Amino acid sequence: MSKKEISAASFTDTKPHYNILDGLRGVAALTVVCFHLFEAFATSHLDQKINHGYLAVDFFFILSGFVVGYAYDDRWSTMTAKDFLKRRFIRMHPMVVIGAVIGAVMFYFQGCSAWDVSGVSVSMLLTATLLNALLIPTTPGSEIRGVGEMYPLNGPSWSLFFEYIGNFLYAFYLRKLSTKALSLLVVLAGLGLATFAIWGTYGDICVGFSITGENMTGGSLRLLFSFPAGLLLSRLFRPANVKGGFWISGLCIVVLSAMPRIGGSENLWQNGLYDAVCVILIFPALVYLGASAKPANHLTTRLCKFLGDISYPLYMVHYPFIYLYYAWVKNESLTFGQSLPGAAGLVIGSLVLAYLCLKLYDEPLRKFLTKYLLRKQ
Image 1 (tube, rainbow, N blue to C red):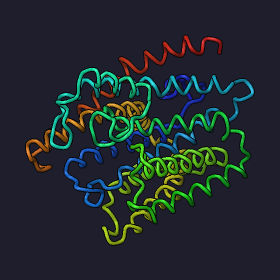
Image 2 (image 1 turned 180 degrees about the vertical axis):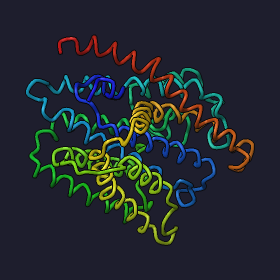
Image 3 (image 1 turned 135 degrees about the vertical axis):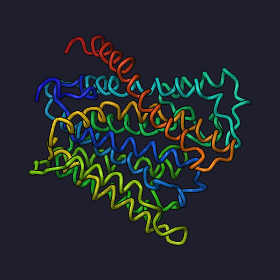
Image 4 (image 1 turned 90 degrees about the horizontal axis):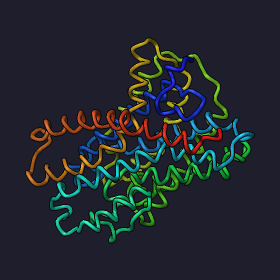
């Protein structure tokens, strides 16, 4: 693979990423944006449109485990845990910071009946910005928006909190497990996740964003299955001859995310079963297909590279504008049709902002940090 084919998501490492997996990460990020858009019109999880968009996080965790295993499993004879964690910090944290800053800049424009921003002092906002930038979670009742999020300036930061935990577990524990022991962990975590999804309070696994008992339990189970499952898949992976892998897997992600709520309020277990099947069975299969396939043509290669490059920035910058959109819809009592121009502007604007953040901030800062933090390597 030529140097030009290495995605911007991986320039701190020596191995190229799988192009198709980069593209699928971008598809999943777009489903997250659409899922969040429809939060403005939902009264609960039961009537949320793009109903299962939250499952993209589990897909991200599986992808992360697979890529980390592929990139680092054979490098521990020359790399320490400190070296690894530096690399992951360089990869992940610049966008955590810019997401917090964008959230702080937008905060006072997001007032609505669901949260009152007028009573939040500048000092409180600055404290919240610092906590979010450092990925220090806040507890319900103490965060400034008042809706119970770990990170009230940029809600999706919660998954980076768990992503860091996954990377620490890998550096100090998971990488040392035999394939048999890792398989046992994946099976046990999968059983735990299925139990939570099917017999839990919500009938889904849209949890992890708040410091509450069920959120922390569910968020931990989501990580403890998906990240090790991706790592196990990277160890066992033997590519098959797959054609059209990007389009097949990408379409599956879209369809699975858009699936309406299953079972209603009377049969919550049915939706929990759907979530469990998607995460435990289907998503690993999609990662396998994506890793086995190669781009069919130059256009697909370029599309996958673009989607892969902007996937993480898009995920980390769009949500402050979701708060703004939500407030606008609620304050003006708009239907989705009435708000459609704003929704389209949000998606397009988030894509543009993600690309600008990538090129003008994320890539330059990662290169700077790589130079000074990894200078001995």
